[in-house]
Structures are given as structure tokens and as C-alpha cells.
Amino acid sequence: MQKKLILFICTGNIYRSRFAQALFNFYALRCSLPWEAFSRGIAASKVPGFLSPYVKEALIGKNIPLHLAGTDPIQLTIKDLERASLRIALREEEHKEALRKLYPGWEKRCLFWQIADVDRLPPSQALNMIEKFTLQLFEILRIQELKQNSQKS
Image (cartoon, rainbow, N blue to C red; front, side, top):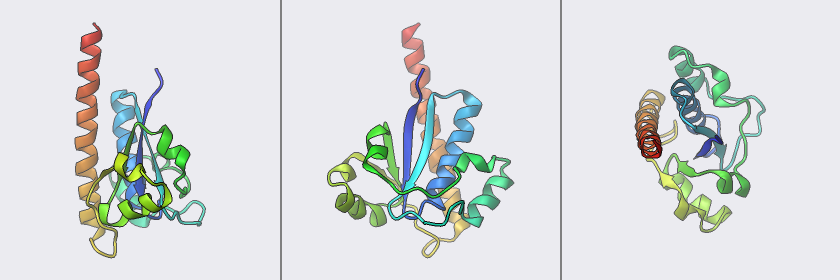
């Protein structure tokens, strides 16, 4: 069975979206959920291998392998938007207009969370919110999969 894809979008693809990606993939792998997350940035950092130290610390603290956050910041492309079944931008205020300008119409096909970047929200709060929302999303998708599988039986 081919996995369905979730795309997490933020600005630089070094912090919020990568944390959501790692968390989601960690739980999806543990529960064999046929979904996989990937992340991209609207204005991705050009520093190869860069991952926010806040994200590294949080993932290590949760015993989540760092490789689940991906290796490099990656720029969002139209192909990324097209191949994802679900698209979530981490903050509407920052990302909706940028999406509209870069890829007109796609802003209407994204969900928006309200999680500010480090300049507006302390990392501990932001990462806790991302974890809460990601786990809620995971549970919704897990329940949907269980319902679909029981209907097939």
C-alpha cells in the first residue's frame, strides 16, 4: 500500500515544520499508519544540514531519531503541493499570502495552524503546540484508517 503524504509548510524549513514532520513520522511508524510527513519552507534556509537547536533538543529529549526530521532545509515547490494529500502551513499570518503569491490557488487547499516563529513565541510553547496539534492530527487519521479498514472487512 502506498503511503499518503502530509506536507508541513513553514518559512525556513529548519524549525516548526521539521519538528511536526519528525513527530508525525515517529508515531506513524510506531503504529504502522499508512501516512508519511515531509516538510518544506516557503523561503527555505540555504544552510545544508541545518536544523534548529530547539528542535534537536526536543527530539533528543523525546527519544525521537533526528533523521525523522529530514537532513536539509528544502524549498517548497509546486510538485510538493501536488503530491501531498494534506497540506498544513504552520501559521496563517505568515504563510497564506506567501503561498498565494508563489502558487496562486494553493493557499485555499491548505490548512493553517496558528503557531508563531521564535521571534513571537518562546520555543517551549511553540513546540508544545506543534506536538499537541500533530498528535491530534495523528489520532484523527488513525481513527479514519481504522474505520476504513473495518468497512473493508
